[in-house]
Amino acid sequence: MTAAKHTPHALRHGQALALQYAAQILINVNQEPRLVQRVLSPDQLKAGNAVDTTVLGCNYATKVMLPFIVELALKALVAKHNNDLSEGTHSLCKLYDALASSLQDELNRDFDNIKPSGSSAETRSLREVLVDHDNDFPNWRYLDNAKHLVAASIDALQYVACSVLNVYNSK
Image (cartoon, rainbow, N blue to C red; front, top):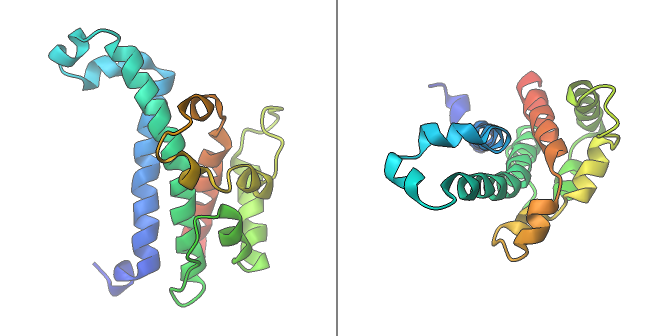
């Protein structure tokens, strides 16, 4: 392992990437509940509503994890371009605003390229997505308002996470 792998920004990047992969598995379970039968033991599957409960748990976990993943990825990108100094905040907007305008422009281009094209479902800019989810992680991590959490759409955060990690890898 090279010395660069041991920098704080590289550690944050690796954490964000690992959690993004885990979130993708949770998203897959949420979209395809039959996968639950491959990951729970036969005894666990005997419990009443085991599949539905697992899917709900995956939904919760994904919606708590994605804002955190974006936070880690943004902190890594900020630190990478700021002598390993990052903002001490959970605010996604403050982290984005700490980036140089050239990095913001690159993030916006990447986000526009990877979000579903031609889809009327996602018309917000990357910055608008961040505004809408600015404090999700601190607000949702204890599941105090689980009904709101389940109802909230966070699909665009997966694209934001991908864009931040892509730009981190390209610069």
